[in-house]
Length: 283
Length: 283
Image (cartoon, rainbow over all chains, first blue to last red; front, side, top):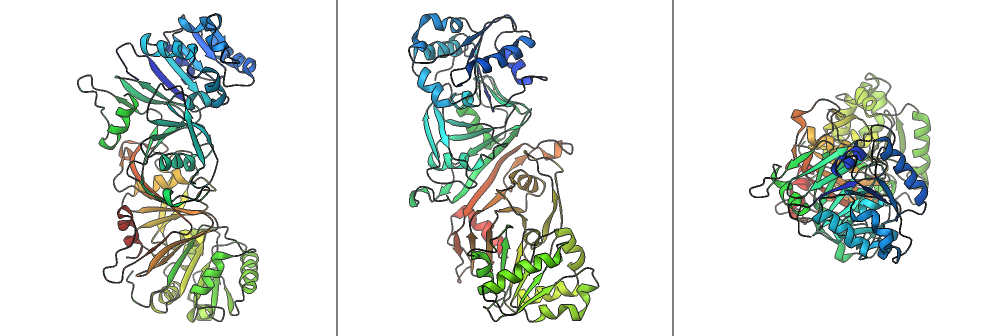
């Protein structure tokens, strides 16, 4: 995905973000989306209870002062091609994907007119694209379709599918510390050592602004697994066997972490072992 | 601690080992202790319910066929200096530290005659020294005295004390995956990057046989955190602040992992990034 000067921002939220108290993350989303008068679209396609979910976000965003909210829900790929149903997207300054099931979201929006419209909003109109929980998983090109909750990393415990593709070379897992998901994020990089695993805690978000900065905000942290230098025995194993993994590189970046990018050469003011990871995020 | 040809073995158990079914770990302990006719001492000093705990192990070991079992419980440092109470130790082929509280165990046995006797059993008589849960924590020179259960690694969330010192440069945490203890094991290596953090799962043990081999057995895995190359912001933080940690090296070694040591040069048949870790275990 080619980023230019009008690329917007991605807000990848680990689920269960505060929707009643200070709402740090939702507030930031509105600011990144152009402020309270900017059109905001909430896409509930991932959810099987779209009206309830929309109601929660409508209440939260209204409480924060947002004035132009629209609810978008595709129940089929036809819906996602219907110009009538895309109206809320064409001028949106912010597009928010709620939680639910990432498979459902992809099945109904992947490679549709709606998808094109959202891509255009992000790349050409500077919009903020946010996703929480399933919506966060779906942001990247490689998406965790399912992952068993095991205590140890196991061969065959995860499956990757195609996501919405707003960001390359990462796989996002959410509710990360709360649901003890390190083993499956290790399995991801054992199976696909060229990808980075990103574990985002609840009420925590990674904000990616290509060419500008990366930031962790909210209440928890971001955990990164890098298996590019790891030595594993995955090719010797049968499905369900526990993996041996040696030399996995791990980063823990708490809320408040900000890395900004130099205009001159695109490098980051960050410790050297993070440079490669950070630059892949904004490629 | 200097190891010679008559050094025995250390069996460091992550707690909650099977005491009713196949009892893989307890069976191995008996074998390493010289078999069913070898004297076995069970030390319940860590526990506040020593009779119940002794009863469990007596039943389990008897069931496995062990014939010479003795129960040792020190309620004071005087107990641990009393020759009458040390009788079970002087000819023991196996010494087993039960769970409870590691502080209590150290308070009553650290640097006592009992401690000398156990050290002698390990170094000069080839005995197997086993510890489970609190007993596992106490095995090393640096012992996790307490560690708060946080979702993120935090400054000041752990405290190290002096353990029984049978092994150097490691800090053991138990019930590791079950109680989600990675954050505190990361805190350990952030505070003390010269030490390795060892997280041992329940019903899982690390067997150390200096000069011979290392093995992970049981049902879970061993997780190693190595912060020697990590970059953290710990010196800029206040207590309770979340740590930023970049470039932590992580190893996950499942049950069944065995590394044997070459007689010629003491090196291990293991991937290179593990060599330093493995050789520190048998120093």
